[in-house]
Image 1 (cartoon, rainbow, N blue to C red):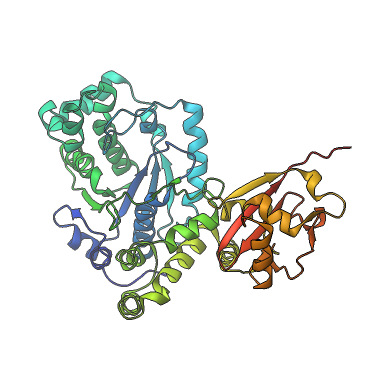
Image 2: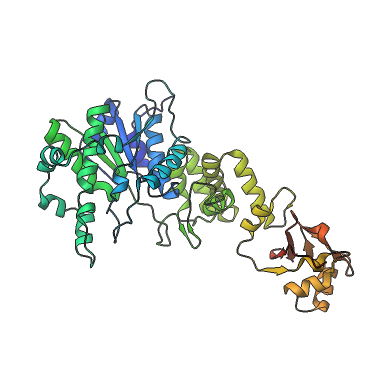
Length: 432
């Protein structure tokens, strides 16, 4: 079912409208348009920075318009200079094909390809760019681009002023993207291209080409480039990029990324990355102002986005994993889960021999791992009820930890007090 109202106004109140061509607001209010966004196949997975344009296409579809997701099988072989200070490493066709397959499967999670009236489609620009002949392209497309026009674009100017400059390969990217718009206009009646604000120059090049080559009107709309209040690039963490692929970024770390959102950003992110309406978001805006410690907005954001990207089961597992940090049960977690959760905590590797037979004394285990400085400190810790092995409180100072305590025959999790964890990795060797 389509949403009511104008998608242009929807983008406005959500803070998603950075710029748009003239007349677009009226067009979107009175016509059903076909629109596209391009996705660069530089990796086999999209990342959280891609969520903004993906949600843009999905919102567009909910308002009755037809979304096209263009994967750049052709332009991916060239490289987009927009926002880049150095030329990208060129990919071969095998790498691009592999990346396209991963991206297609992720886009299918957000767009409806089977609805009546305005089903989404995924298109690959290699289908038409791969058929181009150089002479024909220069005669039919290149004649509409002046070098002065291309040099005036910010992405090109910035690179020309750098020490490395810009290659002719990347310099032609603007023409290729403009031709994409023209090809989609001719093949599928596409009249709107959307993207990040760094694509504004390329999008206008496409609208100009359609006007000159086909005497037709086309439009562009760009979203803001998301940054956080700390001034760092959205989606970048100390451990690297936050990917949509669970093999690259686990659902637990994905969930934690959203939970760690700055209070100053969380309402904006609810507008950008969820389907909550204005009234619902206002409730969370009030909670941030009046009860910031409750973190209700953060929990809602993390739940909604994690569920949307990875599913309800993965969200529940991520929630369980996060609760382990506060003393929750570890029974349902695997070794890989525990390694992921406790990646940043101290760890010690110990010989399997120490745990053979009756096992190692719990006091010795504490000193071997350094969780306590001495046996005496370990005794006091146990008497105070502050030592846990695999989540279970240790009450016997003379107790032992044996091979039977190992989680998946590999790990032991020690906890001192409420949140002081230590991971014990047990080697596989046994002395015969």
